[in-house]
Amino acid sequence: MTVVLIVSAVLLTVAAGLLVVRMTVGPTILDRSMALDVMMSVMVCAVSLKMIHREESWGLPMLLVLAMVGFVGAVSIARFASGTEDEESGDDEEGERA
Image (cartoon, rainbow, N blue to C red; front, side, top):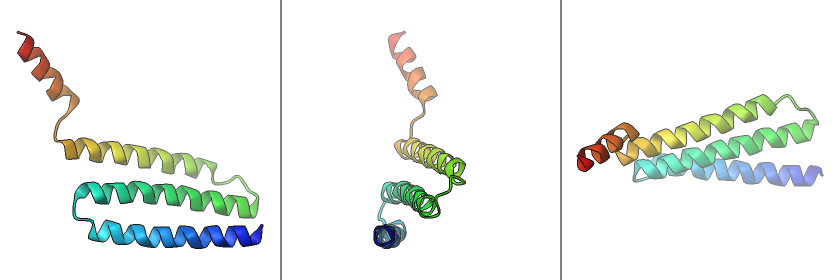
């Protein structure tokens, strides 16, 4: 089991390093957003790995918060990148009908 945990930790570290490079070099904001979203997933996996290794459940609230922050961040960046809001698109539809 220890070998599996070590290999998993090494793979997560490599993934985090590559994601930092993508966040730094990424040509567009969407590339950086995607890298940040995947980084949140890597962080959730790392906390889960530590919980498994120590056989504790202290990190469950942290996992929930990380998942929520990752989701809200991805949605807000996608909305910002699209340049429209729900209120604006709703007004446009009403104006076309009248």
